[in-house]
Amino acid sequence: MSNPSKPSDAPVVAFIGGGNMARSLIGGMIARGADPARVRVAEPVEALRDALKADFDVPCFASASEAVEGAAVWLLAVKPQVMRTVCGELTAVAQDTQPVAISVAAGITSTQLSNWLGGDIAVVRAMPNTPALLGAGITGLFANDRADATQRKQAAGLLDAVGPTVWIDDEVQMDAVTAVSGSGPAYVFLLAEAMQDAGVKQGLPADTARQLASQTLLGAAKMLTELDEPADVLRKKVTSPGGTTQAAIETFESGGLRELVDRAVTAATERGRELSAANDD
Image 1 (cartoon, rainbow, N blue to C red):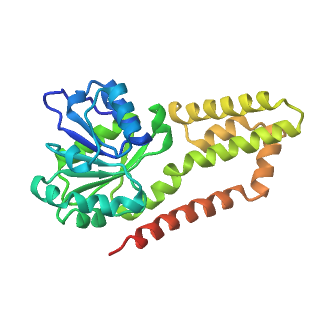
Image 2: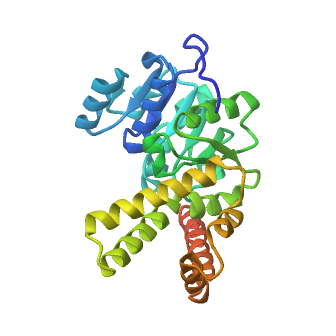
Image 3: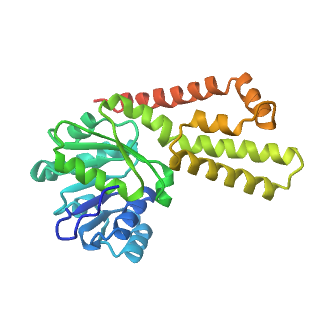
């Protein structure tokens, strides 16, 4: 994880959109020592502006054009379907100031973003996931050719506030990043639901089944991230021949779990490509 910049060295960052992801990033930045005065937020909903101001003491504005004033880094955190309109409103400023534009919108390419901002703009695509809300996310990053080393460092430093970052060399792979980690928490939640339901069917109280499933998933995740062993090795260590775990694993395997996960990730990847195509000029 990158070290936070000193307030005097840090660029002004403008968040376009003040929803949950922006709030998480802002909170992470402030917790790591960022100067609130150098964080600006554009958010049309007054209640969200008031909450951000109250919680983090950051300047908040109703319009994007006000928020980007003096900002070298723009974090575009709006819905994909309105991204083109938002960028169109900022084209003149983008061409005058040449910021690095960081987008967390799925399915919108760096070329589309640069073109919507008038062309020849440094763009970094970022795909965080919802555990970022707890500072436990991971973010895939891709930078276009216009982004220099300093701008790449600024982007990584900003997203590091909510978890580790991974650079992707081929932008096409960002759709796979979205499918594996961006959408991935929902897969885990679905597994948790299934485990809880199965526990209840075996006679456990609902609260007990929920606690057992949730804590088991948390513990397994910590083992995956903190132990220097791959998933298949950890699985084999807990699977005693002829035991209860082997009976369950064999059922998963014979039921086609691997193939089903592969199909699910493929479907999510293809959907990302469809979203990108739908936004083509």
